[in-house]
Image (cartoon, rainbow, N blue to C red; front, top):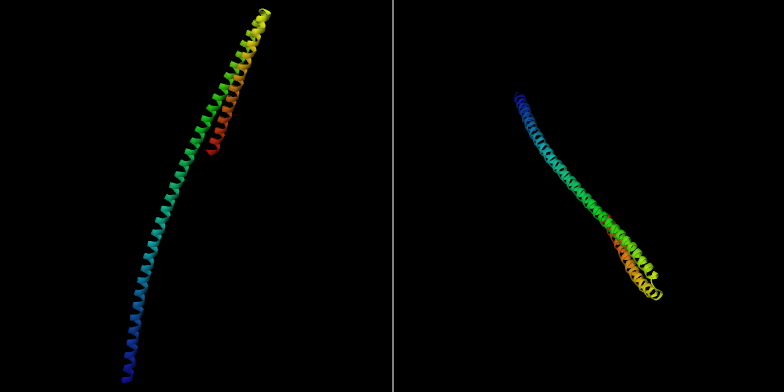
Amino acid sequence: ASHAAATRDLAAAHGEALAARDAAHDDAMAAANKAHSDAMAAAEAVAERARLAAVAAADELRDQQMGDVARLRNAHDDAMASAERARLAAVEAADELRDQHAADVARLQEAHAASIATSESTALEKDQTARALLASTSAEHEAAVAEALAAAERVKAAAETAHRQA
């Protein structure tokens, strides 16, 4: 009888120990699940903040790049307009020199023709003078035309350089 009572007591103690172990296990699982859930929520919050920061940084970079593109486009347009104004000024200067040269040549030819109409010795003297003046004016004109053409080439080269840099 004492053996049966001891077995019952042992079985009861074993049942209580199992129940206590199961309760402790359940409590530990509940605490682990809560800790896991809290950690996941914190990780998701950190990931969302990181995603929002990355999106904001990308938006800021895009806005900065768009501003850079607009500034470059404006600089290019300004350079092209400046180059075109310079080209037109060079063309106008060359046209003026050409017109001046034509007027000079016509004036000198008239002067030459008038000098031929006078006496033979005076005509010869005036002819020599007119030829010298024509040669001098022609040389000056050719030098001026060459300088205008060189200026136009420099303007064109500067415009092309500005265009490539823009």
